[in-house]
Length: 379
Image (cartoon, rainbow, N blue to C red; front, side):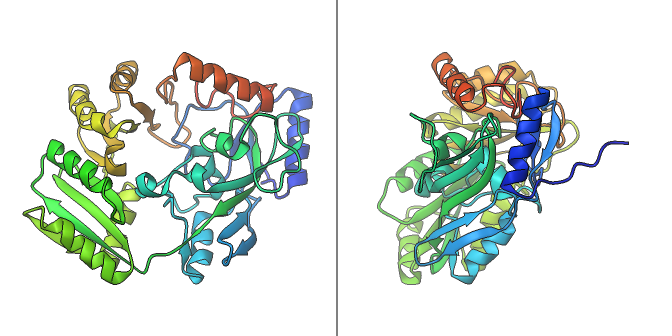
């Protein structure tokens, strides 16, 4: 019978747990909502549940700033923001009802607005965390203690819990647009769709979503802003296409929610989800190259910068990563199940980047306490 792990519910409890782990030489497997457990390699360590670190600490709608604990569910944050007609402009996916702010920050997850509004790390104003020495560290905003030479909020975003235990997150929030509509353009092949994406993304328009549903051959372009301006901009780009339809507010919101949450992908037992990010001009060629590896379902997001793909579960992982690298892309391989084995989860970084990552790791977690091996065999 497995031991029941009590969730840590205060900064003091986190510091005590980290110091105890240091004394015992015991690595920690950090988690909260566990909705991102299919990302990264499996960690061998003592469970460290931070889901008790939840709640909004402060929210200043007039200043567009929210401070919350990492175990706070995303849905709770979004509901509070909606009451003030505000939102998280980086559009984080949940991938599960228990999705938390901390897991989202740890994976630096952003939705379809990324090409327009920036990634999560661009909206991260400050963090508080307990480092690998059991010390409380703040970065960004009001700095109590920092680590010389590192922009901690930027460094922590996307570190997959390998650098420290988040205890507080400060985010920039945005006013919600008055209206949104999505233009659906059918009948385009991938090359044509990519050309449209690059063209429209470069125009002075409020296009905040550009995605291509590969299996359906449909390009989706979302416009947000004042209602009159949205309609005008939709009309201005729709004349450049032949087979079009328009999704109004509720329909548009529903589509992008389904797209963000990946419900349009049906993953069978013999299939596995992959995510590729890289230069938009390379993404169609990468998709075509993956056909040789058994590519089935696929779609392009971020105005061409992101490819979602479904490959056979027995696809040769190293070959897929080499194919990604050949097209200047980085691949994430999702485990077949939460907490499942997932070796070679990420495309290995270039040597210089890897060395820099190791320097940051040694500075913040010198004993290799947090999520050892989560990213690569040696991190």
